[in-house]
Image (tube, rainbow, N blue to C red; front, side, top):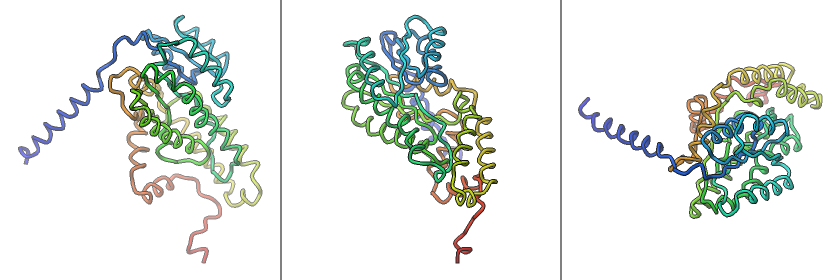
Length: 327
């Protein structure tokens, strides 16, 4: 039996070796490349800006706040330039695009990293209004699309790279609110964009991180304040249906998620670096063991199994009316 399996093991080993060799090839002359990154105040974008700056690349980093921009400039070289940008504001996006064009000129923009996002949007769907959904969709989905469309001519000129940060929540909707829909939307946008850009020599990569320790992920009080706001404005009959225990359990779950994040945020920025610098970037990256071993496998299972698994640990409403009890 061992002899029969030997050819298969050898073939598998050769495939893995070829895959490693192919993905290890890195482009030359990277110091001539311009890369624009959104959301550099903190987290993945901030870390990526510093990594690329150390590699000698020409980094154009956008931040939402002046404080974020000033802090980043203190920790990087004089090559790095910052810009204040609110990606949900079309005028701000248009102005930033003009700024980038004036810098890169005929060279074009080698890399566009769509990293900026809004995460304070988790909660049961019924507890939220259209405005609650719009707030996160305007940033995560429509804002990212706006930035990308404005900068596509510059990226095409350089035959460059577009990197879009989605989430494991873009493959498996494990919580209500606008966050998961925004990430699912980015997955669809990125897939269609990748196919459209192929003949232009532009490569599009998607980063699907699991739970990592970033400022927004561990801002427990902010998340709890938001879910408390949603709960307190609910009509009495809706509160009665869910019950106080449901609310308390949801808060406990959010606290647990915040404390179980991985501190290795560099695993995400390393994937971004590879997508920008590799000869053969991957279409999708899934940094984080929770993403690789939990969320992605669950997303491929039959719906009944996925629903059962996620439902086991979900809060239970006060008025659980089964089909049998309703008769």
